[in-house]
Image 1 (cartoon, rainbow, N blue to C red):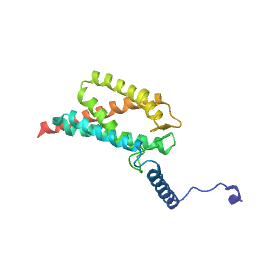
Image 2: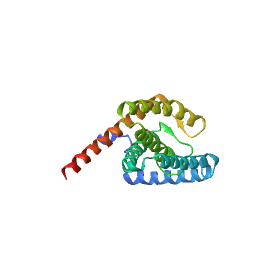
Image 3: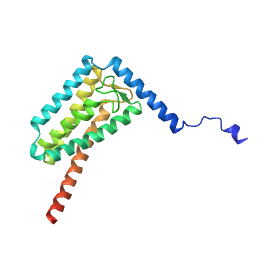
Amino acid sequence: MLEKIRTYPTSPSDEQLAYTLKQWSYARIDNWLDTDFNTLSWWFEVALAIVSLFVWWKLVDKERLLELIFYGFSIMTVSIWLDQVGYELGVWYYPVDLIPVFPPSTAIDYIMLPVIYALVYQYCSPWKIFLIATFLMSGVFSFILEPLLEKSGFYVPVQWKCYYSFPIYIALGILMKMTVEKIKTIMATYKSKL
């Protein structure tokens, strides 16, 4: 009798999920090779990535290089995670990307966001100035760049509005600055005890 009540299907096994993910990855690579690779949009992303790295290297304070790389890497890690969650849940997707495997927005998550955040962190060290710059940067990202990326075909929001991103960009900058400053304080305390 109990078996007749349970007519709903069971969830897929780990093996089935792994196979499905593998098939999805191959399909994405095939799609990327057919529609993205070596197109004008793809070359635009390549150029954007190279220019961003070049500008960052020219402007970065080499004496604070380790701190700025750590801050940028922290931004990159969290933005990749957030982007992947949104992508996996179908909240948005990216029709064009540098590479055909996740995260779905390589140029933005790996290069542009970390570079811009790190430069704001470097040039706007006092908290008051940092907060103002972060609010401005977040506004530009949310209300100018996201709609521009959407209109140019690099980003497709499915269940997302640009104003949802605004507090996330702000929180990301603030939390990472707090984290880096806390680590710097711990390191300074440790060094003074030596």
